[in-house]
Length: 398
Image 1 (cartoon, helix red, strand yellow):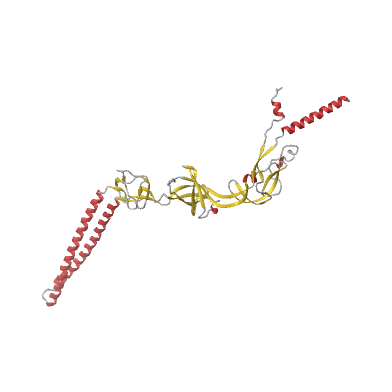
Image 2 (tube, rainbow, N blue to C red):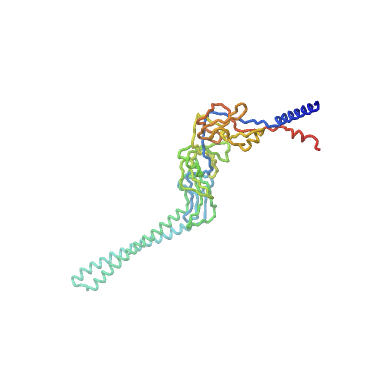
């Protein structure tokens, strides 16, 4: 009998030790907490774009020739009408002289033709009077009339020649003026594509010699916004952006235009959004990549909760009920819809909520049984503890 009592006591001791080791080895969950706060919710649409001058003028040449002089270089400030380059004018000067001589010759021929016409008219009028008096024959009168008409035609031909040579003369003068390339606007030279001695040819496509930005103190960002977000963008919305050159500086701008033309790239539809930017300090340069955030909605002095609290779902403990509830692990408990979890008696308890606008971190709390400053669970952290198996692994193996 005594032997049975001893065996029972040993069994109870072994069972108690097993329960103790199981409870000791069972991981105890801990939680990271966030708070219900009052503050500002700022909803933004992010995109990337490129900085450009508002007006960029590409200056070319309308005549062919060799670049003889350059009066400006990169970053030169120019005024409208200022000379920026000179093409060798010798050929154009010769053309002006040649066409000018042709024009003067045509004027002289016209004067001669008009004098001949006056003489032919006098002869015809005189013969008309003499033929009526019977002094000259009708044939003489007809010959004088024919000569008068011929000289009239010669005058008109001389006048046409004058117009033709005048046009050629003016064209030669224009080409000579075009040999001196001038800035069409006030601005800054952004690029220069020619050097002294280089030959440029004005053909069907005018070559670009200079690129002039009209005013770099006013710039714009050409950014592409995804079709899912374009409905939120409106003209006049404030914009905050940064550039890689100044990663710790935020710049401001305003949405100036939302273009309707779609841009399809690999089946992705985007739309151009133009943002105007003040660049008084000339820090920003054309071509810089801008990381843009358009402020589409802003609410101040609202109750907000961490967005991670809405994504949190408690994991079922692996104990006696763990195997039974294993199929429901990770599923939300409590009422359907949006919910967050609070700690009560060290256990997560769901609370139904209704939310509004959100940003990258917080979500507006529209309704729910929560108070300002209350702690919410945002993440479950499983503590790792030494188990009996770990303790056994440290001993000798047999």
